[in-house]
Length: 251
Length: 251
DNA sequence: CGAGCATTTGAAAGCTGTCAATTCCGGTGG
DNA sequence: CCACCGGAATTGACAGCTTTCAAATGCTCG
Image 1 (cartoon, rainbow over the protein chains, first blue to last red):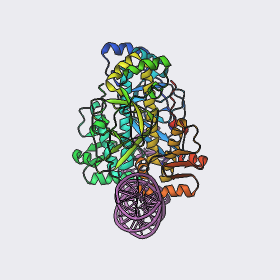
Image 2: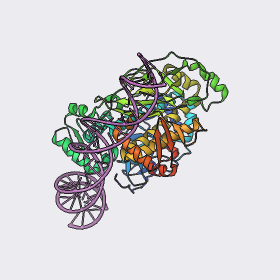
Image 3: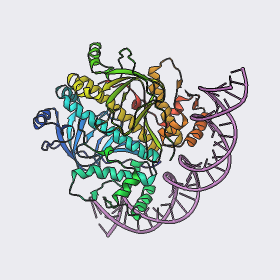
Image 4: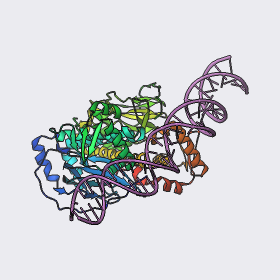
């Protein structure tokens, strides 16, 4: 397989920032948001490459992302890495079956990131008093599973070009709502090694495949900017379906 | 890639069966279980190879599995198939972000299956009146994600032998609690094609890999019976961690 | 301006897929 | 009880996509 682990780990102190209607709170009426605040313990801004929690460690906070990019990944004993998902603004972070069980994966920021901290202990109380939040969380979690399934199909049943096409479209569609003014070019902080570890390929093969896609005028990726050159052909190549990626639970 | 779709679809009428404390209800005190029953709409027994719901169709029920094997899978436009997960007794079935959106995957029984039907419409009401059920559902869903992540690692970063070893151990550990008397041999209703579509390989390569594992005395698979011959070496080969597979949310 | 990470490329090996054909096995009908 | 049928399991040969190994070039940050 491939890949070595990262080593950075400079944690920054938490900084308060204004309340926002994102993530689990996005569908609540204004009054609810104010009340729900009391369960929170704070918010913080983390620089790029910060380890938020590590696979194997007990971690007792939940987070909602406000801004930034975070990746979830698992490291294998042989040193290789599998990136599981990218967490973007409005997404939920660090859900695990049991608070007492160690995390099964790690989370690290790719860019400067602002997130809202929520102690796991308050969760049951929140569920009791705000069942609509519970429903919201359930739906978000269900959507995460849907995305995870898409990834399984992507890695399990597609070739290199199709896998990259899918990844680009997926991220493109999730970033767009955050920056409606961007056209076909978005910020794309992943390295080619990150891409490789996401779609189950090697860095070298990702590089070759990127060249192939570029030469055919499908996408352009350089200096951490991604440009969708031929959206229709990309969708067709990837077997992409927007539904599978949308961040809009409705209930 | 590979594979064609199945065609069977003989639905059987629902049959009432006694209340059981499984799935979402497994942690509730007895009194709660009785009350919670009112939200349910019934239970049914399905023969093997029954399609429970189909990718692309709206489906308005949730289920808890009582007995049997169900597989969740997605079909690609080129005809290939990716199996996402096997649903066993006590597991939850058919969670999707939005009831109005078509299912993104299909579900089919592998064996005769008994499941408890729960109309999606009642969900919000259930959440309101029984927040502990909401918490339970959240935890089950979180566990499903954890398993899904394990599958991603399995397909994305392991070779054929490791993938099979992992799949066998995962299923073995999930089946054991249901049939504590079984020793190292369990019922295993998947065909080699099913295995292939689960771990992202082809039928032919799965067959060769199975032979390799058998010749090395690691596992034996024939006539839909799986025997773990050398558990320690299998665990080591698969990079298997029991935590990732356990069906025991505690809250 | 230098060091270290990230990106590119070439060549060769290897794992996995494809194609085809045969054997095995459970279930059905005579 | 036995022959037959179709799906499942096996196997061989070969092609092809990906990985490995190495090395060169390009960038970015201190």
